[in-house]
Amino acid sequence: MVKDRQVKELRTWLQKEATLSLAALKTGMDRKTARKHRRGPLPSERVRAHDWQTRPDAFADVWAEVASRLELALGSKRRPCLRICSGVIRDVSRTASFAHCNAE
Image (cartoon, rainbow, N blue to C red; front, side, top):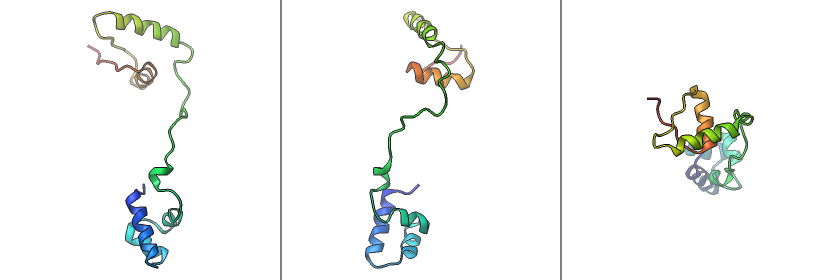
């Protein structure tokens, strides 16, 4: 991952009439990467927000039932604990926006 500092340094070396290969070498990046960052925005300005799903929602079909059970559990004095396999706990936590506690 190229940092903004490296790109600024690359552009400084290129202004001093250094070759692209030499400037890339001095800034610690590959020649092909340096060619990409010669012009344009800095790497931090190129980042876009992650707004897509990487896999289908595991709770799309049963979310109404899960939400009602979570509301009942949150209403009690005891903190809710979910006894679900670890791969699904992340989905529940993300979807419900609440942190689960460890099984007692």
